[in-house]
Structures are given as structure tokens and as C-alpha cells.
Image (cartoon, rainbow, N blue to C red; front, side, top):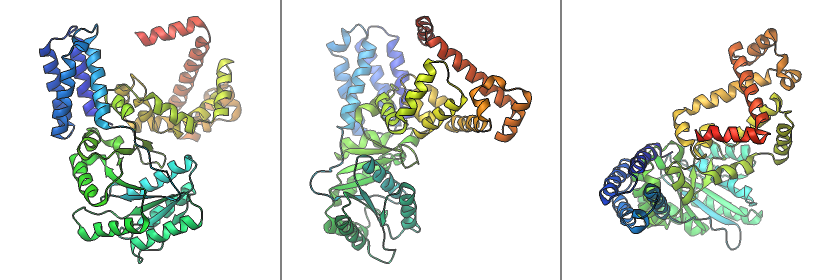
Length: 442
């Protein structure tokens, strides 16, 4: 996410840090680099021009020039201006009487159907009773796709086949929600171009019949400036209330995310960061700015942990760690909880100082490593999991064969586990904690 932009900005700030006190010429050079980085990231030209002008004006002021750490002050200013550029936090409108109707619109292939399921899951976690309505009658298997997702999540889907007109399906879906006490309705409509007048009139008819509280435009973040133009066109016809940017995890540039709010005035409400149904995050401008600048996103990481980690299980594991009784069975449970939170690479990007490391490790490498570790532990019996010291040559061969790995793979896991046990044992003493902190400082 934002890999290219993040790397270029970091290089610029590193050069500034080596200057000590900054002259106006140093700031001008840095701003030229920032401008090029943003343009290469496919950010709208006018947005870039205004952004750089604001940052420069503040950077040549007294708050930077008289600072003991001017380079850090410049980073702080860039961070604040990025937050301002991305806009304020925008929540879904769930005010008034239910059911709250949400209409999803956008181009073909933007990910509306998957997003409908992700949004329904989000709403259920907030205590809502969502109903999804399958009104994409043009794309083959779109209705089936939504029904399958509904079954996976145990969220009901209203569908009437592909022969009924979408405005009728949507109106009937809202009526069903009202009669059955559903609190939220998500209307999944077919993809269309904003220049297709007939299909845009169909969306206007759906709005007229269902009176949605939210008209959410689903956009593929990887299309860059094209996404900005699409947003402007849809907004003219439908008065879009919010944006959902999909595939942001695959967008190395970030042009759409950084331009769209400033150009259209429409707030970004959610971002898609993966294919799984729980990979939809509320959009927080300050957290996104922090990620762009390589400073991590600890708050989102904590929220993911709270959503996915079993609290009672965590307390048990913590107690075992403190008593030095942590075994491979506990390690397996820990891995399973981590996997629920998303890919390791994505989690590393949220930890300050680890974003660069995350870029250097391909996601498939970390995922395959976790799968290999899990397979090895599952191939052990409970006695072996609780006491890895009994693993002799014949046991290792049996486990390697059962897990589809090799004896060196088993040895590697056992070595890593022993090292982790030693580190945990050291952390129980004040001296061990000091040694650990010194390792991170080096």
C-alpha cells in the first residue's frame, strides 16, 4: 500500500535529516522531490500544487527554522497536511428510523458484490441486522455470488432472479426489510459507465423508489485519476454520499486516495485491504497519513486484535508465558489467532519501523511459512507438542512425512521455538528486558 510514494518520501526526509539546520534552499529542494513523488503516485496535479505550496509556506516559517530538529518538523507538517488533504473521518449515516438503506454503485469490476458482503459484516458487528439485496441482473452469476457470500456469513439475501427489473427488486427488498425488522439494507447494483444514460436513469429510479440514506460509490483504487473522474460523473447524477476504495492493498501509488476527497468533496468512508470478507476498514485520514509516511498504524492493529483475538485464551497464554510453560500447542493457538487478523505482511505495515521490512518480504513467503509451521505442529501428537525435547530422529521423520515437509524444516521450527522460549524467559527479569531494549536501539 503506497509503497512507491512511501519510499520516495522517506528518501526525501532522510536527506533533510542529514542537513541539521535547514536553509530555504533545502526546503525548496525537498518540496521539489515531494512534488515529483506525488505526481509519480498519480495524484491530481492541482492537488499536488496546492499541497506543496501549503507545506512550503509552513516549512520556511519560524516553527521549522528555529526548531532544534527542523527535519522532524517538516515531517510533522507533511503529516498534518496529508490528514487535511484526506479529509475528516466520515461515518455511515445510521440516524433516523430503520431500515437504513445503502445503495452501492460503480463501474463493472470495481468489487461491489464483495464489498456488499464486507459492509454487511461490518454492520452486523455494530449490532445491526443487515439484509443484502441482489439487484445486479446483468452480470452472469452476480446473484449467485451474493447468495454464496450470504450463506458464508449467515447474512440473508433477497433475490428475485435476473428477469425482474432492478428498481423493482430493490423496492421489494426494502419492503421485506421493513416487514421483517431488518435494520439495514444493502442494495448491490450492476456495474455501469456514467455516460450510459439509460443505466444511470435506472439508478435514479432505484433512488426514487428506495430513498437511500447512503449512496456509496465503490471505486478501484488502482485506477488512479480515472477513479476521480468516475466519482465526479456519478456525483453529478446521484449525489454520492460516500466512497469505498477497493484494492487499496494492491495500490503502490495512491493517487486516487490522495486526490479524490480534495477534487470531489466526497468523503472516503471505507477502504478494502484484501479479498477476505473482513478486509474492509473504516477510513481514518490520520492513520492513512501515518501509513503513507511509514510510521505504522498501531490503532488499527489494536482494533484488529480486539476483534479477532479470544480474550480468555490470551489471558491463559499470557499466564503460561509468565510461568515459562508455553508449549507448541499454545504456539499453534497463537498462530491461528494471528491468521484471523490478516496477512503477516499487512500486519507488519501497521507496526512503526516495520513497514520497510514488510516490503522486503513477499506476502506469499510469510503465508507459506505460517502454513508450513502449522502443518508441522498439527502432525505432532499432544505429548510432542507439550514437550518438544522428546523429538528424536524417528519422531522428526514421522512428523516431516505427515506434514509434507522435510526433517530440516522440523529442526528449524524446533530451533526457533527454543530461541523464543529463551527470550521469553529472559524477559521475565529486569536485566533481560534491558538487554532486549538495547537490541532494538542498535
